[in-house]
Image (cartoon, rainbow, N blue to C red; front, side, top):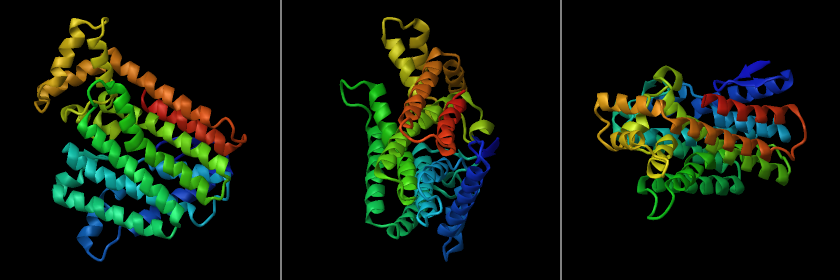
Length: 337
């Protein structure tokens, strides 16, 4: 058994391991090449998060999906680079919106160079992704454009909040399906499509990626509350401090507003609704959520979506790549604790 990639996927087949490792190494080279500029400062800023590492979850999924066709097809690695570049670009923008100070264990780009440089660097990465994408054909351009529209729509919906009468949890799940699920779905779709897999397989891996992406984000929500900065690579409770209601908070609110809610639930909600830029109040809120059943409910939600992703794989032929994709479901759940 070999662990592949920073996310820690266990692979039990030497040939599959070799293919995936070679693919991820090629993606890493592609990322460094795509983030080079004739202007040294742009190169430094664009490679800031590339060199900081990361899980490379999306390229890993693309490599595994490509196993259902020809994994050596020339479009597989560039497509994986496109997806990861797009993801990295969104991180630069997200950190500006969230005023985050740490990303992947290093200072965020906005903390190091300011918001303007961070936003423009994200735009630079989007442009480089588009340049690579243009060589992959009009279908790939259309798929990426649709996913990008969903991603931006998800971000806008998060900013706007749920409309009157809408269940906040349903709204939030729609938000993360757009913000996270859409791009992870593209990773599965591109990997299968660029390898020449048949249409049914491409559709299965797209739907798998969508559901796994939702589970992945829910696991991040849990980590934001439950982990320390060493474990997650960013400051714990970042979303909490910025007043962004992730699933544990939404589960707490739903409980507090129900007939089963207690005075303690409502008191914690009031604390969360206050000013959490104060370190002491933030620490108190974080400790309260860590001890609350809402966090465990969010973990169960993560498991539910991971199991939905696993169920999507049933029609695929039994092989080591399918077993590895099933293993990704377990890995995502394990991240949530």
